[in-house]
Image 1 (cartoon, rainbow, N blue to C red):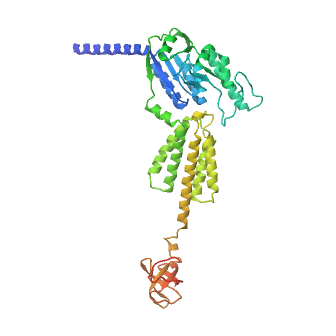
Image 2 (image 1 turned 90 degrees about the vertical axis):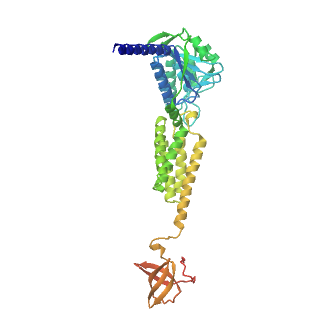
Length: 455
């Protein structure tokens, strides 16, 4: 019994020692988060989980390695808030050589506790993007601060809000606030060397190892505390996204979300047109729900979404009830307009590709045109069932007496009645059916073999 307790105590002590060792190892590590694409909802989730992991592991530093063309304003603000609230110091590092931290990347770099760039990199061009392109208010030639004389009030508010935001971030970490304002108003950019000279960044580093060596001993403001970094012997621990983040990153792409939405609507329409098929309806439902979830992650214009659905509804109406092309043309125009305006306030990297819009429009219009043509062909075919089948059809007389007799029609023998007289083998034209009796008259032409023909 005593021996068993001794073994348990030894195991508990060993686990405690391992726990202390792992904690100490994590505290002497730098977690590396890599952002190598546009800033979107998936990026926000990735950075959030990375910062949480760094805090749980008690890492000494987080290196946010960036190469980004920009991104959504909402996602950028979320990442900035996460960095400012992080208990672990964050070093933004624009790398490798040739990388950039444009637009949203500039705000994130200014929000970080330590700012670094690799040689031959650049940052800036932080002017908010406006839907439809065009020159932004306050944008002039480089070196010339130009305020809008008139312009749209909402655009001026957006610019002034962004200026105040980035100046606040610059003042928080003692960086060049005047150049930050120029990056927003004029869209200017800087190389790594120029950024170091102007006090925009603190370090120019060749790689992450060089960054750790130069960061050692520097003081940073983390929340309300002034910390001195000890990074000389830190181990680098890459933080890679798991499979859920990879899927989220894929479906949060506007082009993928658009494809899922259109595929889902197609599947449901095909299931309605061909009930009982099951597969199109099931897949369509799944695609539609995933597409709607992806749209919920993105900044979607409700009017654009409604126009998109209205265009599909018009084209479906043209296929089901041909209206001489009126619904079809209106549907195509609404579909194109909805696709263009579906995603709002997004940079070019996070908007729908024009080729995607053109392809989806052509495919949708082609599908519904084919459906309309198929329906029209079916409508023009002669009726082969019901009472309409008998009108103007032909049969041959088997026997006749007085005003009644028997007629061979459609492989069957029918009782017939007529005011005319017939001989065996004569062809008759059926006028209508009354109960189980056919009303007939002499046919204009005969075939001699009693086959059924329409007049």
